[in-house]
Length: 324
Image (cartoon, rainbow, N blue to C red; front, side, top):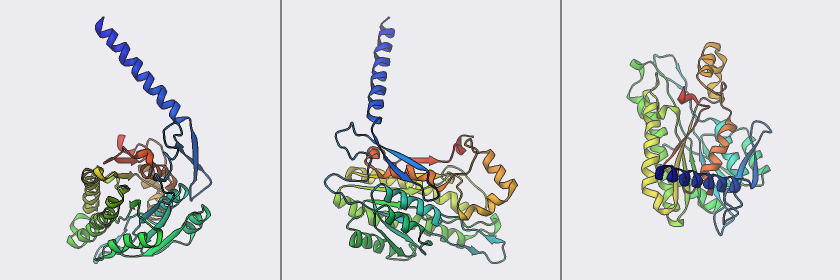
C-alpha cells in the first residue's frame, strides 16, 4: 500500500509537470520562411516564462545579436584515381543556416570561398537584417582570428558561431593516403577548433555565446571510401563535448547538429542514380531526403535562449536514419 501511495504521488507530480509545460508552450510563435520555398516554420516563444524573449535570438539588455556562419566547398581529383567528390555544406546549406538565424533576429557574417548568387543576401536583407560576406580559406594561418575580428568590428559582437565547414574526399582504400587525410583534417576538424577558439575568447569576456558545430551521421558510423570523414566527424562530436565542459561555466553553450542525407547540389549525382537514391530513401523512416529547411529549426533552437540549458549535445536531424 505504501508503494501504491508513492506511485500515486509520483504520477501526480509528473502530470503537474506536464500540465505546466503545456501551459508554457501555448504562447506566441515566430515565423521563419525557408530559403527554398514558402513553408513557414514556427519557433515557440514561451511567453509564460519571466522573460518574453525566451525563444528569440536576443540577449538580456541588448537588441543586437550577431552570428558567424562558416562554409567551405571544394572539388578535386586524385592523381591516377577516379574523380573524387568533395561532399560538404554547399551554398544551399550555409544559406539555410544564415537565413534561419537572420529571420530569428541576427545579423550575419557569412564566410566561404565564394558567395552564392545573391539569394542568401536577398533573404537576409529582406528580413531586415544585415549580411556581411568574407571570402576566406579557413585553413590558412591567422584566418580564423581574422574572421572573428571582422565580425566584431563590422557587426559589433560575436554571439553565435555555426561551424559548418566540411569536405569529404572519396577514394578506394588503397588510394586514400596521407595527403587526403591531412586536407580533410585541416578543414573538418582543425579549422573548426581554431574558429571556435577565437570566438570563445570574445564570448568568455561577454559571458555568453552559442557555438554550433556541424557533425554528421558519420560521427556515429563508419563509412567507406573516406576514412578521414568518419574520423573528423567523430572528432567534432568529441570536441563539442570537451568545449562544453570548458566553456559552460562562462554561460556559453556548445552543441552540434548531425544532419542525415540532404538535398544539396553536392548530392545531385547520388539522387540521380535510381539504385543509390532508392537504397538511401528506403533506409530513412521519413522516406525522403532532407531539405535544407529541415535544419533551420534545429539551428534556431540551439542558438536561442530556449537552449540555454542544452549543452554538449549532438542533435541528430536525419529523418530517423540512425534507428533503422
